[in-house]
Length: 251
Picture 1: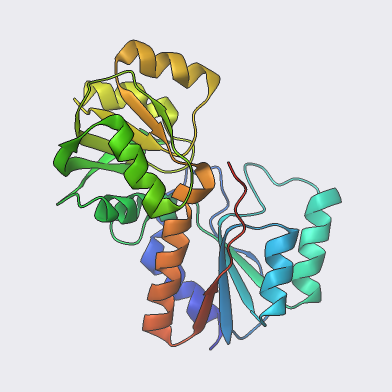
Picture 2: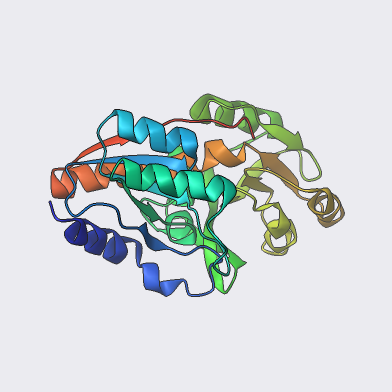
């Protein structure tokens, strides 16, 4: 299949142009081939993910965290090695950051909401002008520790609980990755808990003072869901072979 055809499908599916304020350069970042027979998907572009994509014969690597953020920087050091590997192995690179967090069906947050059994989740969590998360009611209320165990079972990663809110959780907000700064917004919305990937020093105090439970299930673990779902969709709609490359960071 022509690379241009695959990129058009990805751009239209993820509505890439709807996120002009994203710090990521979303879309095709490196063009190193003309046709695609196999696509690899990973959370991060790194030397390891590129080499593993090459090992399975992928022509396209689709990631959540790409090479280019903010203004263009010189391609030196680590970036030069990564770009060199892409061209050496004729692997094009595509990145989708906020578009893959916020997608209402295959996005990281929509996927986690579905796994938790939330019926009809609503958009939540304004970041750079767009609501990138989801919120809604759990099928039944649960203690913070019980919800942490459930998330651990689903995502396969440890969950850190900051129990600053109610003893029972019924209504939750979900923002994958580094969404702990949205704890105050979650509290204002009347949520019992915010599920995210990781917190920060300042967000700890915000969550505590806002009186909301904060559950951190891992930046990496919460952002594998979107790329996995995108790979399945791409395979179903295009017939391309797709493969998820799992490179957990422990963070």
